[in-house]
Image 1 (cartoon, rainbow, N blue to C red):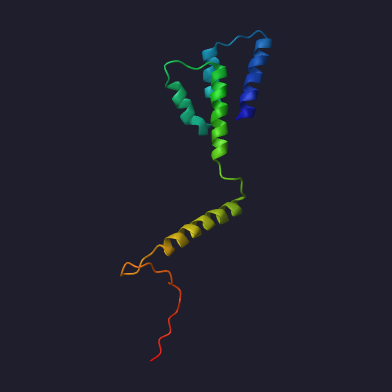
Image 2: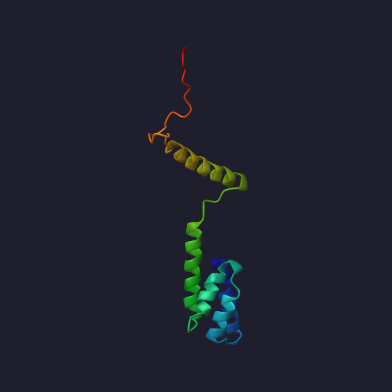
Length: 120
């Protein structure tokens, strides 16, 4: 996202050097519609406001949103590693649930796997 925003404003600066002025509202709308589709919720939220933010304010908001999304991501794994990571989490939840199960008399059943020998 940072690259996209930098490139956008670099092009705006080039237009200014060529003495082409673009209104701030138009720049805001152009920037909003140039961002990836995954930011559609941000686009809708900004469009629904009574007043459009300035291009600089929008730039800051988009960078903040990109950083927030980046911080929420799971560490970068290859697909096979991600599958193992997910399976490990499922297994850990299963083991926790299994250790909390109770017998019919309400006591905790911690020895599910022990064999009991009965001599006759």
